[in-house]
Length: 120
Ligand SMILES: [Fe+2]
Image (cartoon, rainbow, N blue to C red; front, side, top):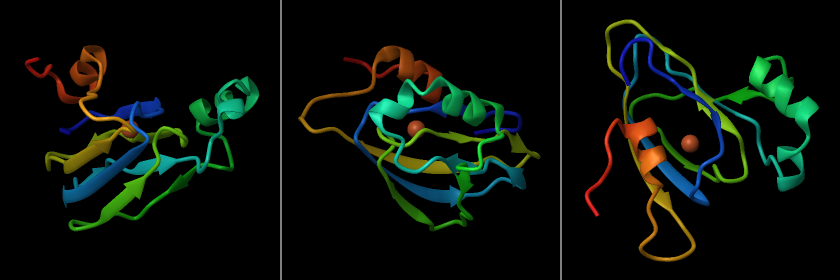
């Protein structure tokens, strides 16, 4: 993730995601989340609006360093990565797990998050 790039608020398609921070940017690139957002919360538009506006008191962030491993249920917890600031690229390895084999992100999500789609 280079300067100015970010991941907007979203839920993952996978139930469980493991990330390993390889290189932090100079600034920004902060991982923020709202713990345990339930299916009912997805339709709680007032709460979601507060999150999208960045004014929700439920928003948390993690201090992440190179080597930090995060095990995260992104399907249930809305989250984002704030824009990277500076020329130092943010490198993060991501492993996603689904409840059945052979499932991958949709081509739209692949393009959005990785800038390309996997050959099928
Ligand atoms: Fe995600």
